[in-house]
Amino acid sequence: MKKVFAYGGVAASVVLIAFGIASIVVGFNGRDEVQNSLSREYIVGSPDMTPTAIRAEAQKAGLNVDKLDIPSMSVAGKEIDTGDEAKAFAGYMRIHTLRRPAATRTRRWAASRRSRVHRRSSSPLVAAQTTRRTLQSIRRLSSRSRTGPARSGSLRPPSRRR
Image 1 (tube, helix red, strand yellow):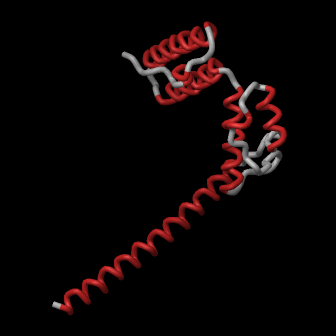
Image 2 (spheres, rainbow, N blue to C red):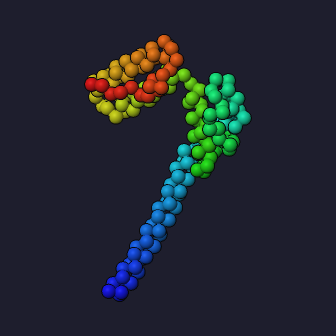
C-alpha cells in the first residue's frame, strides 16, 4: 500500500511540473503575441497624452479629476510598442472618451456598426434595414441627451429589436 502512495505522489508531482512548464510557455507566447501585434499597429500617442495635459483637459471638460485614473506614464509622440505603454494609452483614450457628450459617442458607435454591417452583408436590403434601425436608435438617443442630463442607460448601445 505504501508503494501505491509513493508512485501516486511521484505521478502527481510530474503532472504539476508539466502544468507549470506549460503555463510558462503559454505566458511567453502571449507576451510575444502582444509585442508583435503592437509593433504591427504603428500606434503613436497624441501630443496631449501626458499626465499634466490630460488633467488640464479633463478639468476643462468638467470631469471630476480626483475620481479619474490618470496614467502616470507619458506616451505623447511615442510609438506604442510595449504592454505598459499600451495600458497608459488606453487610460488616456478612456479620458478622451469621457470628455465627449453621450450623443457624440452614440453616433460614432452607430456609424462604426453601420460600416461593419455593410462590409459583412452583400444584400442591399439587409444593409438598408440595418441603416434604418441604426438611424432610429441615433435619433432616439440624441433626443434623450437634448432633453436633460445624460442618464447612465443612455451610454449603452441600443438594444436589438426586431
